[in-house]
Amino acid sequence: MTHPNPRRTPWPASIWAVWLLPLLVGCATERPRTDEPLERHQVLTELAAGQLRLTCELSCAATWRLGRATLKGLYANQLWGELAIGVARVGYTSDLAYFYLGRAAEELGSPKAAETYYRLALAATSRCDGWLLNSCDGIRLPNEATAALARVAAK
Image (cartoon, rainbow, N blue to C red; front, side):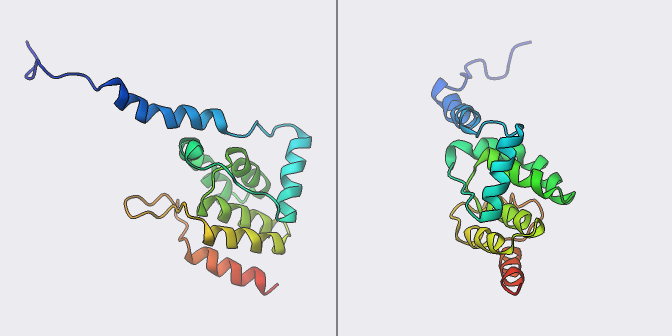
């Protein structure tokens, strides 16, 4: 049996490159694993001081997407230190990432740092609730960040 459209050509290599390049670059730009106690300590110390910054944008987007389910699970299970380390490891700048850092800092007893991260979540240009796709994983941003900011400011 012959294919109904025998002249169909495969996608050009340039199309594949557009799809694969962000994934490959994203995998290459994530932070080193933070399994070492010293690295873990550094991330948690920066978190508590409000000094942890996420600096990776488009090149980390694919890595962020691939790790979202894990981060959502850490959030749901209230594993705040692991959540902060997971977010820092990817380093992706987004409202959801900074919200996660804010919640981790708040629950680990650093309300001033949490305030910083909630403000960064509200100011982030990369938003999980886009007009085409909602990837906020059940968190209502910016509403929850605004409420959290008011909560920690009152402490």
